[in-house]
Image 1 (cartoon, rainbow, N blue to C red):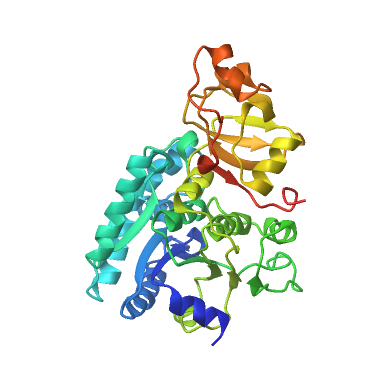
Image 2 (cartoon, one colour):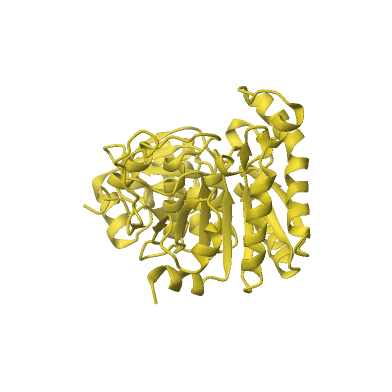
Length: 380
């Protein structure tokens, strides 16, 4: 059995993310593509898979409805998305209704997923919909979102949802065949990369060279999403959603698109939430000794290993941990505020109470609340 076929057969819960380049036609939303993809997804659902969709296309639908040019400002894009969201979900409802499947619209902001209680509520809602046999169609709530709580793009959103529901596979459909070694739109000699075992600097360099034709995300964004879910043990396939029968080919184990394998050591769902869903509120720079014991021995961060604190944040905030060269080695939830850490940095844990007048914990970040990133620089 091929690797791809084995991955698909082991999967039960799958995220399918459909990009703007797939769903957008000359006059707005491409309903023909939606109908075709619904046919393929209905075929997959009959095989007893659970499907959660993350769909772009609201702005394109809004532009088509108003018969105007694509807006450039954020406020205009948000307004166009609010106009188009109704048309988008209606198109899906009609397309899946032909196969006797119902859909549900789920609109989220990053703020919704940054708060653990709301995060779990969203998870429970999606699981309930799946248990009812309904297809959740997820998008960013463009009407209320501001820059501070934006997902950035739907690639990033799909990675967060994959972790949220502990998916077995992430499929991202775009308007090119997958990851190439060069931009295929500009270089006829560009070669498709069918398999990526590890996302390193060379892979990111290839992805960065391929721009997006529409929407906020490009191939680099998709590779970053694949990198995030790989840490949760989830494989990713990036393929061309404009091609007929693309999903059937994927589910038959055909070598289409690019398959990104998950990393060997997966992190728990909660740690993935800390690393990639909660926005960072500041930075802590640590010395070489602290870096060594955190990365290689799995220890907590103590105040004695801290060199510098940046940003203003409170207890429980997510903070990036950097080495003395500015390389990010991890992300964690702090037990002390930035002002308190500034006072106790470089000191022993036995001195904390004498300096602050109280002591919550020995650790500034406990190892249970600390995620270490396995980059090439960090493992040296």
